[in-house]
Image (cartoon, rainbow, N blue to C red; front, side, top):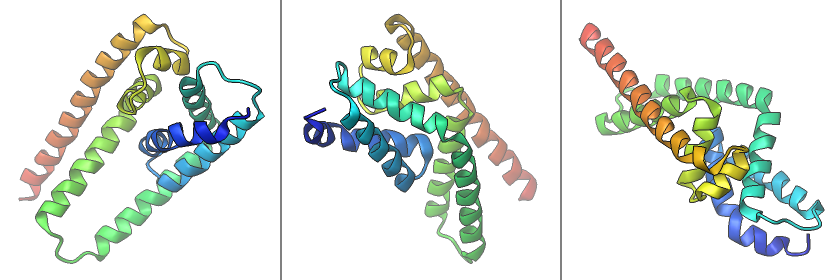
Length: 171
């Protein structure tokens, strides 16, 4: 591929944002993006550049699943240690952190196809690009996104209700 500089300028930031949301770790996202662009270098030509890049990145993440599990466990441990060190956290900061944690858990609770479709759509991929990257029909993208949004909201609300229940018991 001769025009990797152009590809990099156009797609690096969206790809890294997608991967960061997918993985929860920007450094790891950068590594996957770098490997994706290295693979693009090896291609003679690309027909659907953006969907090809997102599909390759998605596959690299799948291939790296064991590493992801270890990394998430490490991040949770660090987050717990940080919480234990904080003596008097600011309520708004605590609520914001809790909301982010609920959102991350709700996204992680989705089946992989739904999660990936939502994250790709958030990055601005159109239905054709999402269909190509996930190897599904264009007509099923809308259904997949609708189902994913509904389930995401359900998971998020369940997490909030569970936390409220714990707060009432503790209070």
